[in-house]
Length: 63
Image 1 (cartoon, rainbow, N blue to C red):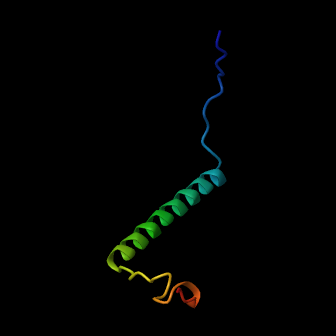
Image 2 (tube, rainbow, N blue to C red):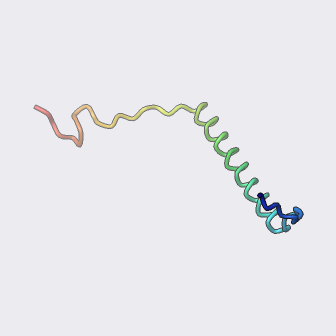
């Protein structure tokens, strides 16, 4: 047999509710920052920088 508690659901503590809203707000701000970053990066392409020079890596000449 299942034991069902007769305890009623109460409203959460105001501090817990405030903490939940802070977490939700921080999450929303984080998403907004990522969207802004990706949008900015998509509009401003970065040119590639070669990892080695024409002479070879670290200036070592190859024979």
